[in-house]
Length: 264
Length: 374
Image (spheres, helix red, strand yellow):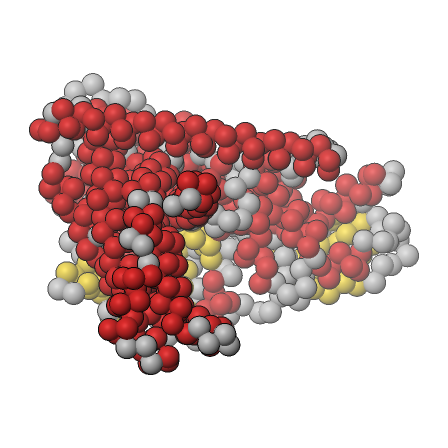
C-alpha cells in the first residue's frame, strides 16, 4: 500500500561515525528518510538508536560524516539556519521531557513564544487545539506534568513537538512503558497525525507491534551501521542472523499475527 | 533542496460580493496578521484559498474560528478553493477543536484565605505528630540495638561519624574562629568607650561558650547533614530501594536511620567543643592584636571570670539539636515521592525545617536556663 512513496529525500545521513573514547557506536552509517513516510529505527540495546536520533537533531556532534536535514547540513549550519531548521522539526523525548514548572498548555506554548507578534489569545487556543489533537482531555492543559500519567506525558510531549506544525517529528521510544491499550492508541495517533498533517515521522522503538502498526519502512541498526532498510515484509526475507532473529523470534511472530504465539 | 521562503500572507481587499482572497501562507507565523485584518468584517461571506501556498493547523483553526463566529452572528461564511490537503486538514482540525469545559468560579477571597490558613495549620500539627512518631521509631530501634547488638551496623555508624563529624571539622572550626574575631573586634569598639576593654574576654567567653558555638555549629550541621540525610534516603526511596529492603526482611529504620542519627548524636557535642575552642582562639587573637590583651592575660581573665557552667549550658544542648537535625533529615527523606522534583523540594524543606527547629529549641533552652538561674 505504502510503496508509492515519493522519492523526495528529507533526511540524508552519510558515512556517519560516532565514537565515545574507544567505543565506536556508528561507523560508515548511511540512512535516507523520504518525505511523508513513517520510518522505524530498530536495534538491540546499545546499538546506538538514540545516538543516531541525537546526531540527526544536533544534540550529539558526530565524529565524522554528514547529516543533511531539509537541505541543511546540521553539522555546519550557522545559528540562524539552525534556528529556522529547528522550527521545522519537533522532537518527542522518551518521557515527554516536559518542563516541570510549566503547565501542559504553557509547555505547548513554549515553541510558539519565539514567533514575534503572535497574538496571545491565538497562542493559547492553538495550544489547546494541539492538546486536543493528541487526544488529551481539555482540562489537561491546566495540569502540571507531575499530575499526568506516563502515557499522558508522552502525548503532551508530542503536542509540544507538533506546536509549530513541523515537517518532521522525531519520536524516541514512543510506546515504551505504556500498557498495550495505551500503546496501540498511541500507534494509531501517530499514523493519523502523520497522514492528516503530512508529517514525516522518524521513530526509534523496541516495540514490534508499533513497527507493524505504524511504519512504512524499517531501518535495522546493528554492527554499527544500518544493516537493512525496507518494509516489514522485506525485513522478513533478510538473511542476516540478527535481523532474522529479530523479525522471526517468538515475539515478532506474535506481533505479526496480532495474537500470542502458542509455542516457542 | 528548498530553502523555506519567509512566511508571508497577502490579503486581497474584500470585494463587493464579500469574498476575500488569501494568498501566500496562512500559518502560525501569519495568523495574527490575518486576525487583525479579518476579525471585524461581518460583511465577509467567503474566504477564497485557491492561491494559498501553505495552510497549517493554526491557519485552519483560524478559518474555523472565523466560521464559528459568523454562525454566532447568524451569518454564514464559506471557505472555498481549498486544495485536497487543506480540506482534509480543515476536517482534522474541526474534529479536534476542544470543547471548553466551564471552570467553577473560585471561592471568595476571604474563604480561600481561611481555608489555606486552616490547611497550613493542620499541616503543621500533622507534621509535628509525624516527627514525634519518627523520634519514637528511632528510640525504639535504638533500644533494640542495645538489647541485640548483632542487628546494629557498627561499620555504618563509623562511616557516618566520619561523614558527619570529621569532615565537618574544618568548616566548623573556621566559622567559630571568625565569629570569635568578629565578637572581639565589635566588643572592643563598644567597650573602649567605657574604658572596659578587659571585659571583652567575658563577652567573648560567655557568648561563644553559652550560645554561639553550639548554635552556629548546629546550623552549619543542619545545612550540611540534614540535606545529606534527606538526599541519601530520598534517592533510595525514589528508586524503591527502601521497599526492596522491606521485602527482603531488612528494617530500613535500623539500617538507615539509627546509624545516621546516632552518629550525629555522638559527633555534634564534639563539633560544639571544637567550635568553642576555636572561637575562644579567634577572640584571643583579635583581643591581642586590637586591644593588646596578651594571651596570658586572656587566659587568666577567662579562668577567673567565666564559670565552667557556661560550657555545660552550651554543650548540653548539642545532643538535643543533633536529634532534631537527624530526625527531621531522615523523616524528610522518607517523604520523597517517585519524582526528582520532590527530592529537591524535600531536601530544601529539611534544611529549612531543621534550622528553624534548632533555633526554636535554643530559645526554649534559654528560657529554661534563665528560670533555673544557671
